[in-house]
Image 1 (tube, helix red, strand yellow):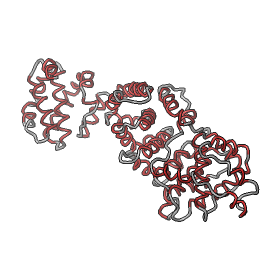
Image 2 (cartoon, rainbow, N blue to C red):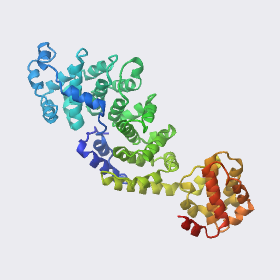
Image 3 (cartoon, rainbow, N blue to C red):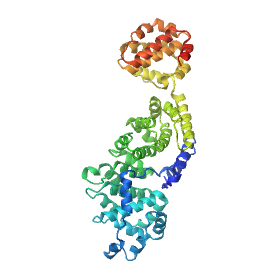
Image 4 (cartoon, one colour):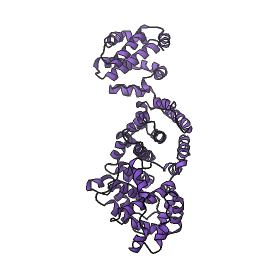
Length: 475
């Protein structure tokens, strides 16, 4: 993968929309998507308050120069930094490699935490606004001991998360943009292991959002993805942060990590096995944060390349979720087009998977859940297939009424038997021979409201010839 270019905040919505509209083209350039979509979550809440406080109190550059920490003459240059106009500072960095090296050297000032925080904050803000500015940093520190400077800082015991988050963000950003050979594979792996397990040794004391920020940077590189995915604890880190109980910024970063992982086809079955696909579906169902939903649509597109993931997406009723999302109020009008495109693509997959064989596979497991396999559309398209093997599938449904203790399974079985009776030319006769009505009548008084309701509807379908007229009347 080419080195990613971070997106300007004002371009974020446009970039995500461009990516979404390209979901269904085989010619979408993954590298371009990464360049467009990598401007992600910023610090929020208390972290923003801390950042404002840090930037409002610049270090005493003259004192640092007199102490020999800064090269002669740089204090005058640094005194011109205006946190409200970082474009000028970015130009200064690009024009003066010595200035970059001096700032990186200040990261080693463990005894002067405020100076370290100020330097990290300013550098982070420069590259967050325009990641092309990483080029100036990378060229200036290519031959320096930049890794050691950041490693020593991240290993400081009891280091606050504000400082650790920004140190890891900068180091990971340099790793994914520096020329080949600047950082060894061992150094990258050391950072990954530190992000995952350093806290146990009172090192790498990042926040969850900070860890995800660093991984978002690293996962932009194809070659890093397998190593990161195989590290113990990484899938669990992503999964636990795909939670609606967490701040939207953290959820967004976790979802974006998943999006980057889904470009590696070998990971798709594993994402499904580890429950990450289900978690993504739940987020799509419950979240209404625009940026979360937008990147979630990107995840969904890539997941549909894997049959196992498609099964999960269908079982989680994501098609219905997309239909509901289209009626939400989104600030960006392009969201509606993105949702409709996602719906179209998913419907294509559903048509491929929405078949009698899948139904029989679920029936053999003896555990039924409401999904596209248990809908009027499915029954209209597949009802005649239930004649196979002398109505073997219908007989299995009837048997479930006698043997299953799962309330959802019983409710679904009642629904399916009712649809069979209604839509198959001989449906009522077959159900009569199998004594379906007698069994279902016993379930009308079930304490579970869903079971009782579906049982009642089933009886009505068994007994009424003009069910469609009755159904329309009841609406």
